[in-house]
Length: 231
Image (cartoon, rainbow, N blue to C red; front, top):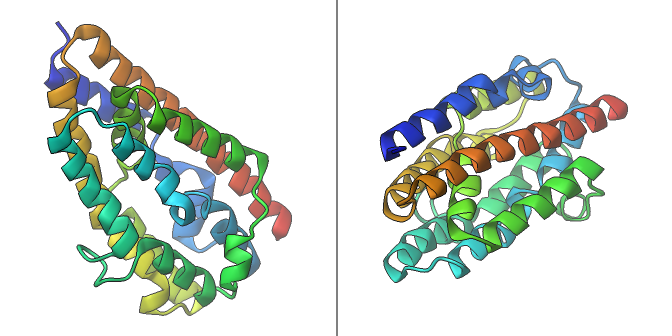
């Protein structure tokens, strides 16, 4: 029998096998290798996630079959929408717009971005996962997409400040998400224990996390190509 503990161990191994921060896009951002124009392109393309999060967290909330757990997911949705848990009352989409403005983009440019095909594909995949089978949605969103490496975004924020003369306000989105995403992914761990009761369901979790990591890598490939073209 595939236990919850073994399922989580395999999920963590998926991330170890393909750590997001080793992708050349993230590695370059951490090291400050890109031009300001290239970072602007990153800000535009990556915005397909934080600027439209209601299409992901919101679907997961609506399709949660248990009212106790809907309350937990509602906390995540509430934080994204209001920022009153981690962000001092600043909604996360506003934090991301602040990031864009600090690197030289207007909110209109951020919200009207022309997304690369890989970003559009990821959006379709992410929305589909969050509004279908609930176990798959939790695995995709909270165990796959939000299981980031602690400390990575905070390091990147320091690079942005040093390399591009960004302000604390401009990098707040990344600093806050170092702790917020860790909390969101821990909710996924608890949901797994409550909902993935069978061998088949737990295998679905592992398969979904693998699929999600592959899709995020595809997203990063597309954004990276767009950044290089913008340089």
